Length: 324
Image (cartoon, rainbow, N blue to C red; front, side, top):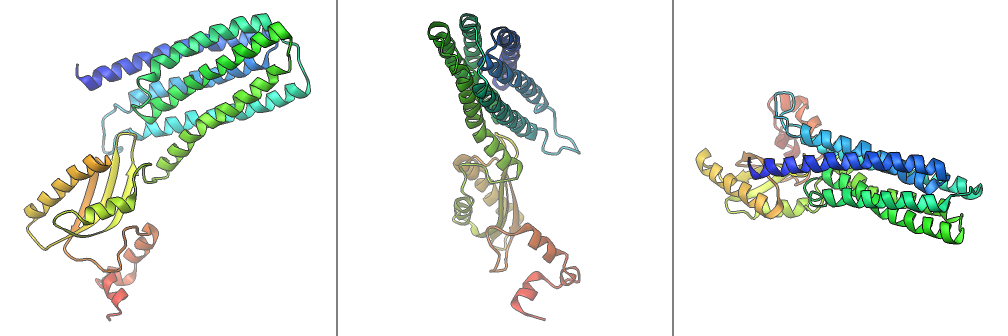
């Protein structure tokens, strides 16, 4: 078994264990919340239920991304990871809004909470949440999917601490008002923790340049590379957490293909080493219109490509320079 396959197997086992733990937490807290009349426990139970679904989706995604590329999915299924991470984080935002709403409602209409039972159930949930968090911690930086799953469990663990403290205060001091207050705090925390993942995955799904990469810096690097005269039509996007793609028109001296290939081979290695771009595609040219930019409006370029002059053999360059 290779190191990668061993790591993936371990990651899958830990995900399954975390799913089991969250199922137990959800059942304990939802029953306990109803018994004790605690909105904080019910809120935490709902969050854990969303985690249960999220972890199940994460496990499914971790299997799907291993499917081989085919004629219909030439890039494979790596993008499923980003889509699942987006769904997980978006679900957290919805759960957070609902929890805040219920907290406000309970604050306006106070309910009597059984503090002793609430404390016991919250303590069990905290231990289980910490166990699940530690299981996934080592995989948190593996990909967006695992990061999203880890964030789910981490937020649950932090919430559980708050619920334990509130339960203790309710049991010893009778501060019933803390129950809806902590539920509202949980809601805000849920939304805050999920928003970064929602933002990042939305950016990637919209074919945005991956965070941490400056397109203009990459373009300058390519243009300064030995053998390259100019670069334009540069596009960079993320297919998954591990696959960063680039396409660019690269202008070189008029030369044999074998010589130009040597330049692009060295450039591919340099881009991966410096920027983590591991799927570059270059269109080699020996001349380019001076008006070509690094970033080009694809819609505008498409209109030019379909222009009658282009179809008749008159180039875009002729129209721009005014030649007839």
